[in-house]
Image (cartoon, rainbow, N blue to C red; front, side, top):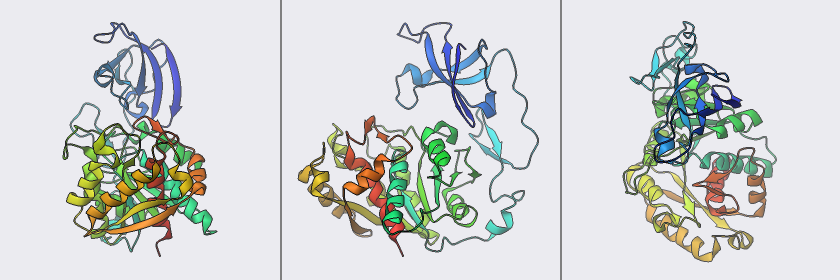
Length: 370
């Protein structure tokens, strides 16, 4: 290892010189990521065993070599503690955590019979990149109404990255106070609270983290295959079902693009149409932006995109309710204040404003619910 880089709790970026170039390249110096709770915090000169499979394939979010183990030193064993939830189960890097509702948890009595979200708004999205935009929309609605910003809790599912510490977005939103807590569910781990399922994650967000608003989406690094069903974000439909079953108010955030070169993702992505139109059996508020003329003049937008989105959204009813929310330049200004970088599929706010405005109006609507 030749250089230590950025560090935030649970993760360290490194520069590592490989013993041999990446397959098919002459690259020997690579970015690497160490999950410090699992493999320690490597120092300059340390020899490391790396997993370079995603890096060698040139995958975007997975563009790191991942430290599997130090070769010269063994990190200290974790201190004995409560908890028997095993995440990333039966892999060499499985980790044991304390589940928020298990018997050793101080919250066990509170959650043992918990069964109701009591109308808590739950915004569901299929991409991690929607998270900061949804939160920005929620804060914009609160500020416009002269109210304090809502207490926002993120429930991170396991369709993308498993460690929450992989997400710079989560770290930045937490550090800036835009996000109040993270609950990692399924095989995902590393949140402020750990839960077994989306259902227990939602109940923990309501009863333990005292959320005013919950956002549910997968971690960074979604998996897609160019098919209707082979996409990790299809689970967004199941999250709608979970929120409704528990007495919450599901709000569907649409994945929209005016800049994606693939027709199946122009307007409303076919993934949103599948997740909400085929998988979500419980009704949700599907939020559609009604953009001001100034927004429709931005790159990739225009009246044609607006009309396409509205036509596609109508295919989702019933069982869902379409909610049209006005979006103006003031909402765009709030998005620009996001402490976390806005980027989806490599495109930022200026390159694909419709993507982020659409996510933001979902947060705006959820915050305005009675």
